Length: 315
Image (cartoon, rainbow, N blue to C red):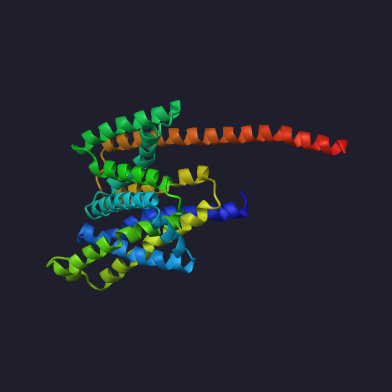
C-alpha cells in the first residue's frame, strides 16, 4: 500500500472510531431532552462547518447549490432524514438502547441494497440475495427476543439508507453537502435551543459547567470525523472504506454490552450473528467483484501495451 493510501486508511479508521465513540460523549448528556440536544448539535455543527467552508473558499458553491431547485429539494430531504436519524440515535443512547443503535447501523448497508433494488431497479447477486434473507430472519429473531419490533434499529437503518441514496443524487462533496444540510436545519435548531430557555425543565435549567462545554462541543465532534473521512475518501478505494464502516456499529455494540451493561441474551446474540453473516456475504461479494474488475482491466490493458510495443519496434 502506498504512503498516500496508508495515510488515507489511517484517517478513515480514526474517523469511524470517532463516530463510534460519540456514544460515550452523548452518554454524558443523559437526562436532557433528545430534541433539545439535537438543536444544540445542529446549531453548533452548522457554525463550525460554515466556518470551515468559508476558510476553504466554498461559500459560492453553497449559494450555487441552493439556487438549483432540484438540488435544494434533495438537500431539504437529506436534512429531514438526517434529523430523524440523529434524533433517534441520541434518544436511544440516553435511554440505554446503545446495542439497538448498533443493530441499526449494522443493518444500514443491507437497507441500502434493498433500496437499490426497489428504487433504482438494481439486480442482486446470489450472495446478496442470501444476505437480505439472513437480515430478514434476523429481524424476526430479534423481534421475538425484544418482545417488540426493534423500531430504533429499523428507523436508524431506514433513514440512514434513504439518506445515503439521497446524497448520491446531490452533486456536492461531503463537506459542502453536510454544511448545506445544516444550513437548512439551522433556524429550526435555534428554535429548539430557544425553547429550552423557555421551558421550566429545559436544558439551561439543568445544565452545569461541564454540560455547557459538552453542548457547545457537539459542533466540533460532529465536524471532526467528517473532515477525516473526506480526507480518506480522496485517497482510499471505496472497497477498503466499505468494510471499515462496520467499525462504527461494532464499537457501539461493545460499548452497550461491556461498558453500559445492556442485556444480551442468547436469542439476541443469534439475531446479531445472522446480521453479521449477512454482512460477511456482502463483503465477500463486493471484494470478489472488485478483484474480477481489476483482472478484466488488466487483461484489456495487456493487448494495448503489446500493440504499442509492436508499433514502437516497427518504427
